[in-house]
Image 1 (cartoon, one colour):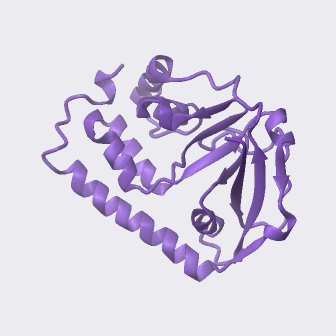
Image 2 (tube, rainbow, N blue to C red):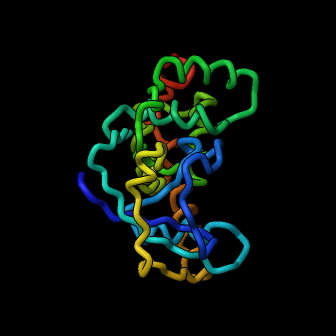
Amino acid sequence: MGEIVLYHGSFNKVVVPQYGLGETKHDYGKGFYLTENVELAKEWAVCRPDETNGWVHKFELDTKDLKVLDFQQYNVLSWLAELMKHRDAADTRRYKMLSKKFIAKYGIDTSEYDVIKGWRANASYFYIAKEFVRDNIDIEILEELLSLGGLGIQYCIKSKLAYSKLTKIEDGLICVDYNEFNEKYNKRDINARKNMHELVDSDINKVTNVFSTLI
């Protein structure tokens, strides 16, 4: 891949990526999250309902000598298993028992990778995840559902080596208008949920190969 330009949307004007920081309950666990899509970064910068403007920070990542795990090259079930390691789609005893088996069967050991690349699980994702673990979604429509969600692709910087190869472009700071881009974020989510509901309720969803049968 070589050098790639990435953007980080944040409500903070000052952002300093540091190894070891970040929330364990984010999609791929602790790390620094970025995207190649500056417009999505703008939406993510103001996705909180606090009505304050956000910021997009510009970076360059030298991927040479980095091990990058790209979930787009794997079955979507591997991606779901990774999310289940960090985020709960349900709080039931049944889910906790089945999710462990699901992760054991479809999960990938990400510990040796410097960077993880894959979809971002936004609000729409949780509708899919909850319906999936309730056995209401057939695996045959799962990828199409995710495409309806407009889930952007994100990069998660994981290792010390990857952090050392991430350079901030100091003159690349962008101020993001809350009203404009929060509205875009919400419209994307509303449209995604509408389209997802229609697909889940359609005859295409056979509800045969479901969560509990895949384990």
